[in-house]
Length: 350
Image (tube, rainbow, N blue to C red; front, side, top):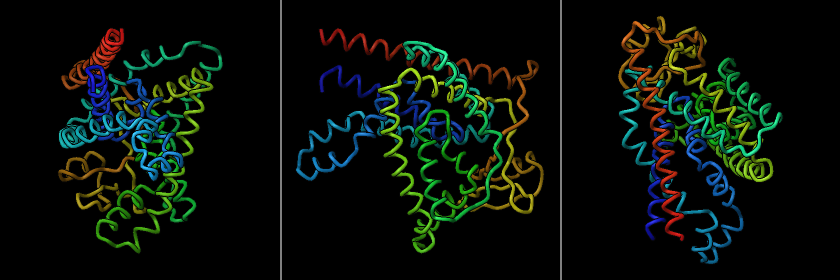
């Protein structure tokens, strides 16, 4: 690779690193990071190009053509950055989120809020339709916070729908796949019970759940990637307006000063995911359960409420404000690096 290709690979890997970090935090979408760092459309196009024609090229031994068709080098850089981020930061971010959730939420809030004006610059022509779609996207994202969770459902068609919706929510900026599964009532069934059964080789219990979910996820990925690619190609400004609204609405979930509404079982007990990936009900208030839970355990969140603002007489709130500023400055730095990289590439081409 020449110098410009190396720079592009490193910059893409850094963006993948940011996506991996976002995926560690519940409620923050890796798709959001892809969108605000300017690689979302390229990622969608690469996913869309995984088709029958690509498989035929592989069977014919035309690996270079297949790699170019799916933008393999870009996907490798993105994947390397994401994996390294999850391996390196999962423990630190997970521990930080558990001990200092206010600061972690504040950092991501500042990061995403500062990116919205940059995303807005991608719209080449504002119109009432673009603005209306932005408002609609914002309203849809905010409304998810107030939806009550559904009951668990093992119907194969519903499980397939869970797969479709989960993969779509992971791709669409502003939505969290795990949070959507909680709303659909099947988070425990899919992410805990079935995965645990699969790891224990209890295939009779795991496969009837995971196969419909997997089929739904594949179908959702194929259909959505093609639809989004078509949408960006034919209605670019409208698509960016809608997704910008989603990202703006997701700030309601990321806002640091709010209260979590825990998921409760049929007995009214707060549901906690243990280190063994089991779910069990705990008696007490949310504060008591948080204080008593062990390291590695996680309270399942069903929604959020009681939004408030920072209190200027609290040192932790000032620290949170500092984290917001740090997140915003990071976006500014990434934008500067990306701009410098584009200038260098243009100079190299000349």
